Amino acid sequence: MSDKQTLPEKEVEWVARLAYISLTPDETKNYADDLSRVLDYIGELQKVDTSQTEETRQITGLKDIMAKDKVEPTVIDRETYLEQAPMQEQGFIKVKSVFNRE
Amino acid sequence: MSSIQEALDLGVAAAIEMSRTLMDEKKVLNAVLSQVDNPKIVTGELNVPYICKDNIVTLGTKTTAASKMLENFESPYEATVVKKLREAGAVMVAKANLDEFAMGSSTENSAFGPTKNPWDESRVPGGSSGGSAAAVAAGLAPFALGSDTGGSIRQPASFCGVVGFMPTYGRVSRYGLIAMASSLDRIGPIANNVEDAARVLQVIAGHDENDSTTVDIPVPDYTKVLTGDIRGLKIGVPKEYWSEGVDERVAATVKKAIEQLQKLGAVVKDVSLPHSHFALSTYYILQPAEVSANLARYDGVRYGFSLGADKKIENIKDMYCETRARGFGAEVKRRIMLGTYTLSAGFRDAYYDKAQRVRTLINQDFEKVFKDVDVLVSPTTPTVAFKLGERTQHPLEMYKADLLTCPASLAGIPGISVPCGLVDGMPVGLQIMGRQFDEETILRVAHAYEQSVDWREQ
View 1 (cartoon, rainbow over the protein chains, first blue to last red):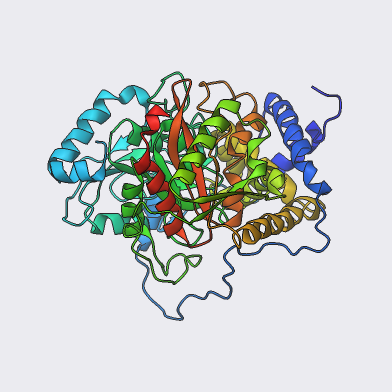
View 2: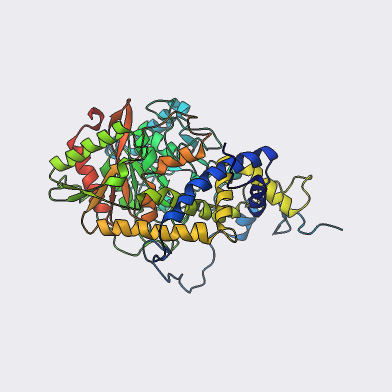
């Protein structure tokens, strides 16, 4: 491995926090290597002159596509959705506490 | 089963039976993840069994996306393509293996084990639609559905010696396709021959209110254009598609196919797509960025794998982080993190926005050459199918399998891979690309080529 690392382990930890993925120290090290290599490769785009070029927004040129302004009952009912939830209670989806108890 | 016609001649019940027997016999390929127990049969023009990639939601079976995250997921609704096929008489008999959430080029990223190439079980079938391509190549069903984001239909079709078709972005509804990179994802058929691919496309193409990226224009008769006549048609050979790691023997095999097109009366000329070299980098910025957004939904709250009931986990943030750490495989996490990084504050201009600008240049290259030529031809992949395990430790090498397929993905244009010869006993694919919404011309060229040679002898 080269001594230069485009994405140091500290930054991998920061990215993993943003992405809500916990990593083991080994994984952090491996991802630092892998992602550095990929970032070095994709960094070649900086060589392309895009000063006169707009960004692609929709490749077939569609714009302002709206759904019909019509109220319709959903195809899937509330119970079906709830059944999919890993935890539920009294008709609600249940989750772990959002705030820590002090 | 070697074609839709053969299955139709057998009759649907016998064809389903044959499909089941073959699936049991060829378990070693690990091409299918689940079978449909008692499929309903209705009559229609496409009254044959088929296999659906397991990132397309279906009723009555699990839809796993080959991820632990959705290992037990049963969708409460079905995809538009599945509904259309059902109404046309097609009978889904199984769900096909894939790289987890369709991220990969070898099907080795499946949480349920890799699929093997029916031509040589020590080699990969390609990916991410590797299960679909291997299933068709092994005759398990006359056709399968795949999805293509950077090459995921065309590349495995090439590796397995079958026909893989990626329609124009917006030609086929993606309602019910598990979203990965929404500005690139498309659904298309994998089949034994071009006519079969056209027949399936005929059924699944068209505008859908449930997918706002589908275009409301008429769907032509795709089988009517398969005349075998390509005299005077202008075919461009992009000079950038023959360097950078393209195996010499693969290149020579595809050049021979191009000579064949010339013999059939097509006018072949050299053209240039100057920004092709940058397509792979552009792709591997945009695709992970969109992945990081689309896969944020897998948080263990509403459906899928969850550590919510784990008593050791105390708050919701730890539940998110642990659920995602254990539910996703290594490649999915790699791409989510790559995308999260390139979209993060301070880097977005340099990566994502820059890539969207380069994408414009890549698209302009295509628009320019399509003023001069009707279709473009190239190898589908730089090499034939590689060995299992050969690239799993080198993500960047794996990404390079998409080198020749990702430009068409970025430009939204349709592309097909047709088998055109063998190198080391493994199939080589000829890629044909066309103008947006001009599926007819590439089908016509692919069909004319296919009918004029025995590709196994090339």
